[in-house]
Length: 535
Image (tube, rainbow, N blue to C red; front, side, top):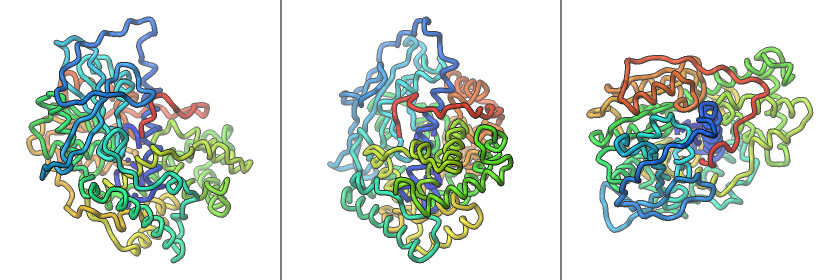
């Protein structure tokens, strides 16, 4: 998740204090997309040769509660899509139901090898998986593909599920956004006004849904999916926000969990406002890691041979864009957002360094424009789910002065990125459910595998340690020195072998560690389009 969060992948909310802003969710969305594509690129080296016959899938297992239909455009062959009906409120079922989009890519092994369904969630909240299950299944180690039907779902509010859209696309895409670094009264008022427009849109478009767009309800939707697919228990793989969703599911339905991997882990004790300070610090550290790497490759980027020189060039670029937004739309806040998105994976570092270099040296905003991309209706839907779920999950401050204080404090400590993470968001006036967050204690859960990089900025390591302490049956695989968000699949043989052994054989050793992958070369291209666009 971003500072503001988590985007697609394997990745997200690790909710920052102001993570309710559209720019925050945008960073999360971009980070998720980067990680998903990176997974595909990293895994492609281990793919079977083209002339190797693909294993034939076992006969598809029954799914008595799924209404099968059509899949989204560009869905990989071999995936079947449909919907499952669920109550609006699982705690008090009535006549009102929602439709939850689901899909399945069947196991490729024999019927005897099949071990059930593997539900996947790429983060957010807001990342969907309908239309991506087959593409993702192809990245899994062969023993996992043979054993499991990969089942994707779109959380309530998202994509093929009952839909929530807080803004029209023109309003959502309007830029530049208010500068999150401004601590003046006028600057803060502009941020608060934008947040109110967002929250008013949510209230106008989906007033009856808002109290039920929560992680608790999404977790119960997962249990309805389990029933619809005719399974006694589920196996689950969750990245980023998906780790919190998995933990909540396990808390509510521990007897229905068979195996569970939680990768890039949300702090279950900080939902969601309290994660901001930790995220601000972690992104600041990863920003410095990027600067160190860029300085080592000064011949390629010309931003300086020291960390301080590179960071000074980044700051000058930010200040120039804030003063005069490129194309009248790419300002300081947009630059913060695309930088945060580029820090989710070091595979994105070359693109970020090249974009900063082009602007710093030639005032060429083209590469920055490419990184930012154009807003789409799908982006708006992702952000709407992100905002509504994080605001409904737990109470947040309703006083703009709190955000102004945090903006000044985190900006002073961690620069523009810290201020961006602390800026006020929709939760100022979109708190539709004030129940306290679910307390996670892991009671009754079977063994769970946790995977975490030590320098992950979106879900800092301290949060993973808190999840490890909250789940007595869990074991932690720590990826030393890695700041990539999303480790299982393409995180290296050490990580992938451990995840595969757990899913296929139930093997779970004591807490262990794996080495980080090597940093990228300057010529590495940012991964794009390797999997269907899931946000």
